[in-house]
Amino acid sequence: MQNLFFEHPILNSPYAYPSRHWELDDQGQPTQQILTHRRRADFITPIPKPKKRKDAALQQDLLFDIPELASQGQKYDPTSLINELRKYVDDWRKLPPKDWKVTPETARLLQHWRSHEFNSIRPFFCQVEAVETAIWLLEVAPSSGNKGRYFLDHLEGANQEANPELLRLALKLATGAGKTTVMAMLIAWQTINAVRYPNSKRFTRGFLIVAPGLTIRDRLQVLQPNDPYSYY
Image (cartoon, one colour):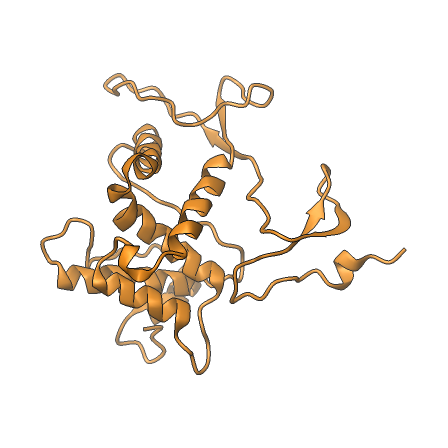
């Protein structure tokens, strides 16, 4: 029997919005059918419940428990929030620049990353989307009414439960997607705006990069502006 999934597994260009995907059944096996829309984020991530702290204020539980999977010491975060955020970023991406609700500097960076005719290496769609998501959450969501507040409240509540002293936002990309490039794009976005708006609390010129070892640390030297192979 012909297995088209394994013969032609890649359906989309890495530089364009993913508009097709192979359908998978309930066991994660290909059905040999191509669906003409983007695949939903669909996985279950186990999240340990935080240890009780005597001085911790009661926080609204912003994660969703799945009764058949949750246990006393475990919570599960479904991906509905990710898919909903994707939709808002997709809709925002289609707006004309005057409606982006970002700084002029950010708008120029977005236009460059999205539309510039690069002579050699150009950003993958997933790289641009990762940075777009961070930009949307920081610059657009605060002025987007209830829909923006919904995501910001979720992030604030989740961080308050996990580590109240450090606000964190994670971007998940597949192996080989070019996470170092995304780091460079984020640093450029933050630095340019921090220089232009020195009194703004949304932007910074200071960055701490944590590497798991010397080999990875050496590879990240490209994030230094004065490195001969700097990504900027």
